[in-house]
Image (cartoon, rainbow, N blue to C red):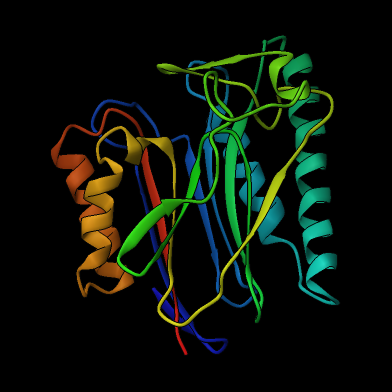
Length: 240
C-alpha cells in the first residue's frame, strides 16, 4: 500500500491459491505513474506465468511524459510488442499458445481510463454501488468483434475470445470512467470471481475498510473457500 501525491491510495496482492502448483498471475502497482495492472496467464497452456510476467515487465518499464493520450499509446505499443513476442515464443517452443489476459487502470486528473484484454476485470464503486466497468472477452459475453470470435481460447469453464498472444492482431478495449473523490476501483483476475460474487464484493466495499484491508478480505475469503485458481486483486481509492 502507498499514498500518492496525486490523491489516491492503492494496495494489491497475488496468491497462488489452494489448488494450482504455481502462480500464473502478475500485478503491477505504479502509483508514481498512475498505472495499475493485473495479468492472468492462461492456465492449461504453456508458460502462462511467462506471459503475465512479460506484460508486467514491459508496462513497468514505461515512463509517463506528454499527454495521457501519449501514455495510452505507449501502453498499447508495449502490449502489441508483447503479443508479437509471445506468438514468436510459442512458435519456437512448438506449443499452441503462450498467452495472458490483462486489465489495467490509468489515472488522469479529470477521469480514469480502463483497458482490458480477456476476462480479468475492473470494477468501480461509488454511491454504495459496485459495477463492472470492463466486459469479459469470453464466449457468451459482450465481445462483438470479428477479431474476438476468430479463435476461441479455452480458459477454465469459460472460453476466451481475446487474449494477449492469441492472435496476430491485438485489440485492446478502453473505457473512460469517472474521477470523483471517494471512488474506488477493483482490478482482479478471474480467481477472485470464482470465489466471491459481485454482491459480496459490493458489501465489502460498503464497509469503511482501507484499500489494504479490502485486499486482505478479498484474498483471504478466496483462500478460505478453496481458491481454485490463482487470486490477484488491486484496490485503488481516489482522494480529494
